Amino acid sequence: MSHRVYLDWNATTPLRPEAKQAMTAAWEFSGNPSSVHTEGRQARRLVEDARATIAAAVAARPQDVVFSSGGTEANALALTPGLRRGTGQPVQRLLVSAIEHASVLTGGRFVTGAIGTIKVTGTGLVDLDHLRARLAGEPAALVSVMLANNETGAVQPVSEIADVVHEAGGLLHVDAIPALGKISIDIKRLKADLITLSAHKIGGPKGVGAVVLAEDVQGLEPLLRGGGQELGRRAGTENVAGIAAFGAATRAAMAALGADAARLEGLRNQLEHGLKQTPGMIVFSEAAPRLPNTTLFTVPGLKAETAVIGFDLAGIAVSSGSACSSGKVQPSHVLAAMGFGKELAQGAVRLSLGWSTSEADIDLTLEAWRKLADGLLRGERRNTA
Image 1 (cartoon, one colour):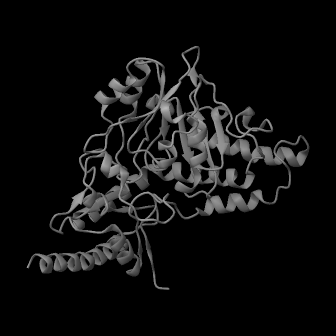
Image 2 (image 1 turned 180 degrees about the vertical axis):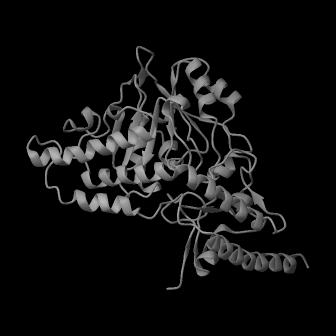
């Protein structure tokens, strides 16, 4: 097959060489990390080294990192009634922004009647006035807002959101999965009470994630019960090889963070400049702070499924938004929440870049888009003739 261009990094990333090496090395250790013999301690060391690396990446303590089977489980674990900070009031209801990932919108372990939605603005940022209104009264609420949207790339003012939440006596969960490895994450500066992470978004393996707690957050009840692994917060023998690879991918991502972010922002700007040569081009959340690697765009009349297939036939992998809908191309709930109509929401195409994306890849993508756009515009002219 000829060279293909991969521009779906927000869906998943290639396995980093460092992660592959760490995973392969971990397979040589036969011990259970809960065993006290030499083999068990060897496996435990791999897990704890990775825990320390991931904690350092988000300015947390290693003992506050809880490993899971991935981001979806991490979010389900984090969304727990009864969480509290210190001696504060336990949360009994959940408020989620309307643009969250499906694993957050479902509400975790909160009952349906205890879940509410927070509106967002036309740029894709949380409506702080609506958040204040939803937080008024009792009981205390857990609020869930993603740090950066996986479709538009819009980065939320999380520390400001945290101030509003804490003033009302609530707690804040931040889904940082789309942001890890793309922008700096500091749980203290964000003022978050919990954050969630996933390995395969930064070059680690699929099937590994983590919940990270602020220092004095209590009441995290295990989603899986059985043994006392993860300090009693998540039962089951740890995925040693996957966790070791998660740690290795995190080290590599953090080492390259500054340089990668600047390079990718330059490539994204080059990409968007080329896209905007098409009349009627819309780049969503362009007025908001965004991840340096993400562009969500459309033109009136575009069908996302047609565009995704057209790009694929041209050797370019893109998506219509979140890759968590069993391969279906569906109208974006994110754009609907931002106030865009169904026609535009069902025509949105996401291009997301990564560490191996090159200028040549951008040039090939723009060439493919020009051909697709020419066909679209010719069709429009025929339909209006």
